[in-house]
Length: 141
Image 1 (cartoon, one colour):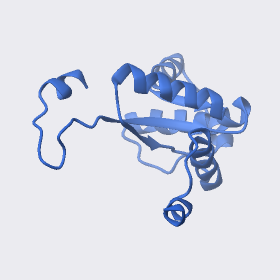
Image 2 (cartoon, rainbow, N blue to C red):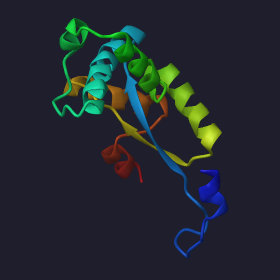
Image 3 (spheres, rainbow, N blue to C red):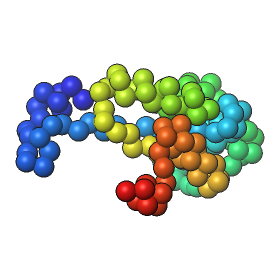
Image 4 (cartoon, helix red, strand yellow):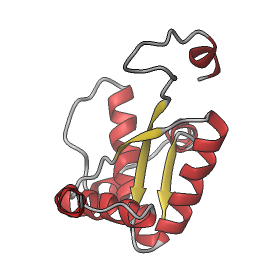
């Protein structure tokens, strides 16, 4: 981000640099509820790194999987690049990332086996940041 800002070429439409970063996020009503889709994502990521393109596994598949020590090490590494937990925890982590990198926006990606978990995650993050749904925001203007 610093390199981008230092080398930014202003234009009429964009006189100042606008920083954005992508973040893997899973937000849930409790830490335990956030851990379930994270475990599915853990196994999905392991498979992706091995060239296995398949749907995101269910929590039950992830729990039944026989992980080797190298798998667990990869999961620990991959989780360093993710934000998950309750709305307060997720908001605090995103606020910290935003301050660290000086970004103006986040692009959030929530990968879950269950659509309802994904939708709830986005709803909780939006609520944590005080964001209104697009239709509500448009009606308010």
